[in-house]
Length: 290
Image 1 (cartoon, rainbow, N blue to C red):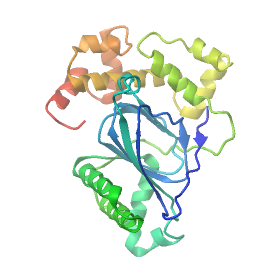
Image 2: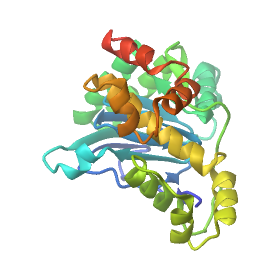
Image 3: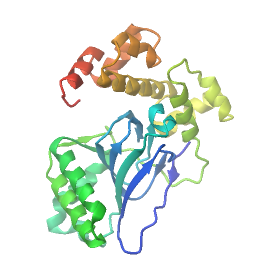
């Protein structure tokens, strides 16, 4: 159930990775790597797993994720079943020493060093900072490698003084370099396929050839959450998406998200978002950021 260690190849003319990725389906398994990751979800929606945090992803989501934080992105069914819809993301990967061992310890880089340290919690980039960085990433598409390096430094310097960075995790969550067979993707795929219905832990434990007790301990040890909590968070993530779209009543959303009754739905929704569904829906219909 431990995430996979990914080793990312560099091109011969660049010290960091810059990629625009288009596909029908985000199929990367739960993974981690030693590089920092600046990632823009340019066109898709779905669910993201970052460390022990599960949440909804939408177009223009932008994050700076520190080294060795396990993460995974999954499209909703609308994206990976409809072949006419292409999902798109842009990302940059760079290491602590990609400009030399001491570069980020220079006095001029003090604030950038602090930014990189903060990314150990994962950082959501919002507001004007989101638009600024997104613009820089677009500029990087058609310029030479040396100019891309300058743009990356402009992004890091800008973010180092920005007040529009929100921690994703409440405490650091890093993975170990492990050669164990990766089982977490099987678990996540099972949940994403079945969360709208009643889910039985016995079924996923059987898929992994584990007893219920062993699976429960194993899952919590490696994700810091119980299996039932993860299922609930994915259901809340789906409910948030439907509330933002504004096409269904709260009662319809409750049952479409896999909850058995409104009372249970309201209780879990308030616990995870700090708002009741009507308040959450109202904020997005007014164009506010939540």
